[in-house]
Image 1 (cartoon, rainbow, N blue to C red):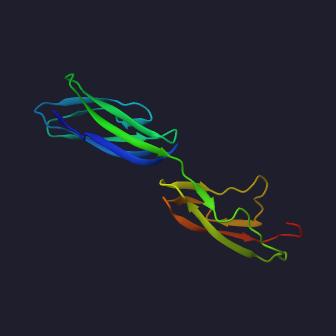
Image 2: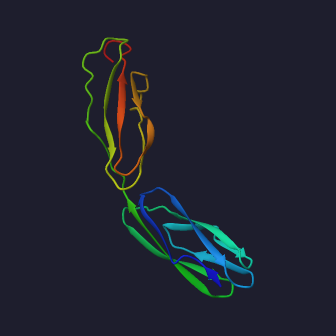
Image 3: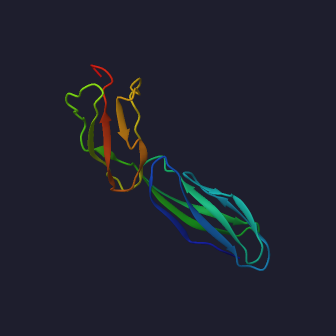
Length: 174
């Protein structure tokens, strides 16, 4: 006999990102039991098999990486070496993160060479999932004229922060 949860719900997960949750299985019988898992994509489990002595538990990690923004529901089959099986209902919903800037452009006006001007604006995540971001300079533009902060990070669901841009022209025309 084994004891395991009847379901595992991931809730909302950003598309194309991996989230893992623990799953414990306990041997409630009187003899050693081996278990192996069968699980459909986009879910996976590690390890895929384990052996437990009476009273022992095994820890598994179930991972979910939704390729699309939609709902996923599968039955994970836990097969015992005795031929008996049990299922765990696993569910998760893939969601796209949605980031936006308060302004689509920033005007620094006329700035003297060697002087710096700073502008700040709101930067937000309008989705129900975390949104990871990285700011990259346009090709050939990493000359230190513009400094952006933060350059990378994560905004939680419905979280906002301030984006800061510092402009320091190096010579006339930059």
